[in-house]
Length: 206
Image 1 (cartoon, rainbow, N blue to C red):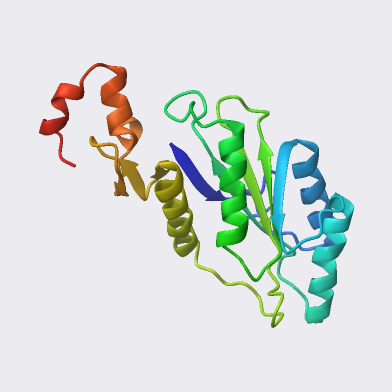
Image 2: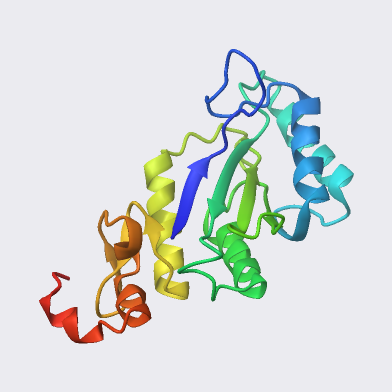
């Protein structure tokens, strides 16, 4: 089942397990180059695709236009897939399509870039990095995480029939619906098919 999270600090600092904050320009640069160096594909919106260094300076250019100091130079989200189990049928080209949908459906007034990482076979995942400065009025993005999660869930459910835990799941009819199922029941229809239990679907609440 897909999961959508805010990136957490991985370093041994006082902010361990807190949402990642990129206070200095070099933190943004390190993030962009880390994601690029490990990616197999990338997509972007409101950016010129002239290399990672150029993307970094495009972020900084708009941030400097704001003049006021920033709390963080980037918003960083991760979307992961259960690539060895119920989402093994989601190939790389489908994930790249999802990345394009994220770029052009969310944060449309912000620079944003997605990187696909496939270095962990158990869960292919997307790093989604957003410049928090609005391109039009230079305001700071203050989107609520759950609002964004429901937007992502709608994209995954409507266009790709992918469930996003804990806000949507696949019922016994194969429909992606809202709910907080967990474990195998996130993909109820696939679970029943895997164990030849389709005949029990009528007895399962959907």
